[in-house]
Image (cartoon, rainbow over all chains, first blue to last red; front, side):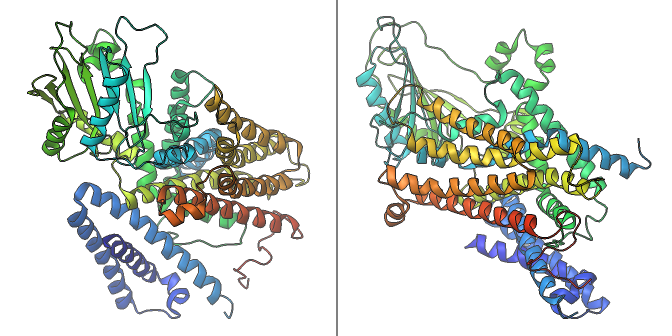
Length: 95
Length: 520
């Protein structure tokens, strides 16, 4: 269960980091965000990834927790990348 | 050298990557499969179907077996690879009365009976290949593997420097755009998995550090044996003085496991049945992150604790933990899967890098239909290295099911089958046009992997359906993984075919029928 939650947090964290990149905003959410919102989203992403690390360390111990967090973060980043790749394929059609 | 730091790093990245990439791919593929070494071995010995008992029970059962079969031995040892291993490995040193050719080892299943299984090297072979290679002397093999790992480290760092937009392009994967897509795939598999890839390369070098840098040992010890004696003490049986009954082993194992809070990996008994008997209990390989075991030595008659050995010292702990981190034996289900997936990413990184070398240069060829020798050589070696080993592994699994169960040298023939298939792909790549060879090799590999569960169902009574019905996760997982890998290769073959049949291969920017059709 913790693993699923961690994977969710890692994916959400990276997805927010991805949204905070101006060049991806149109593909991911269909519009550009203001600079302030973009900054806020970026910090949310970082905070969620940090939270996931604390949770992993608390649940599995800092040694194994770090490994679990790194591994799940990689998977979360891959899922984000796949989502972006899929959406930019869709969104670029009408443009 | 070229102008500028980044260009020179790009040059270094390209050529270290290319020259050792083929070997690195083989090391990565076999190493990645080794995260499921025990499961592969279990699948390759389908006759063994027992589930392992708990530590004290199984070691006690093994001791009783040894007591019955080789009572005169001067030393018994019982090994377990940990919780996931199906059986126990037994070794003994025969007493002076035993004939010279008497056996000195046996395998027991989880229930403590002698394992009556087909002879196979199983997952062990793939594991050993990833640092010892095969058909050549292990001493030189480890040097070759070490040079490859060092080149990998160079390629990683020069690659990070070369990658101009590591943050800006972090999430980018543009599909169906030829060279761009290969570069994106190469970047994604290396950047997103960089922690793992750095760790695995560095700790891989550490695990063979004393092989590559023996001078520290040479300066402080008379010879390597003295060093290993001091670092990993290995008591030998004393002179026998007179018989006395051996104490029951189970309570000792239980005591040790309670003290450690970890499972047992081996029990060695020196002079069993003698007054000088000693029982040495050590932790399992999967008991902690460090690979260096803790151990307890008990008096074999009274059961009194004589000594406890706990490898300490910062250097030992660091080395042991780094090797442990590399091998991941401590990892449970999810983490093991993450290790495996990260390893797959490493394979993708090496393969996409090798393919990128040709994709990049094909566009610049003066006459794409008649490329120069160097280009053709790389193209052929890519097919042989990237397509050949996976096919070889599928054939290795098929041979395990198809070769006659009886007969000496069976495990060697399984291994030979792997290399014949692998070598065959090199020959095939050499005689066929490259674009055709890619499609054919990928398609045959897909078919071979898809055949594995089918042949297994026909030759054993442990089909995928039976395994699923029995809740046998190891066998069902193996068969399903084979189908997944087959699907992956099938998809790759289909993609390669589509590319080859589309009007102008190579220089074209868009792939027909791809999901990405960006208006230029």
